[in-house]
Image (cartoon, rainbow, N blue to C red; front, side):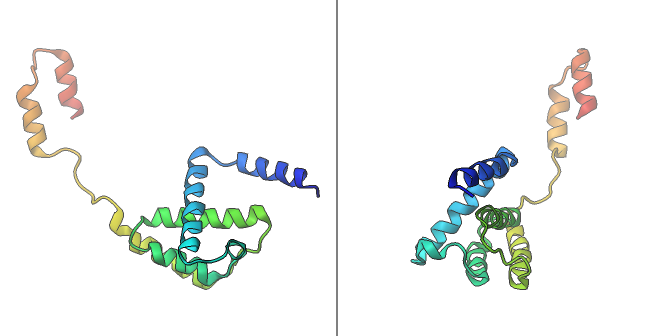
Length: 143
C-alpha cells in the first residue's frame, strides 16, 4: 500500500475514537515516550518493544495514578501498536498481572465514599429556608 493509503486508514481508525479516549490515549503515549526517554531507550526501540519494558512502565507509575488511568495508558499503547501494525504481546501473562496490579495499587487515588449531605448541612438548610415560599418547600423535599 502507498503511504498515503495507509495514512487514510489510520485517520479513519482514529476518527472512530471519542474525544475523551483520544485525550487519554494521547496522554498514555506521551507518558510512555517520556518514560523511555528517561531510561535513554532509543526511539527505534520504543516500538515494537518487549513486554518487560511495558511492565516496567506500569510499575514506574504504580501508586502514582489511578488504576483506570493505568489501564487507559496500556490500552493506548495497544491501540498504537495495532494501528502501526506492530506485534502486541496480547497473550502476555506478565502484562495481564501488571494491569491487575496497577488497578489495585491505583485504588489509593480514588475518593473515599462519603455521604453527599451531612446532618449539619440539612440543619443549616432547614434554618435558612422560608417554608411560606412554595419553592423552598420543593428544595427541602429534594434535599
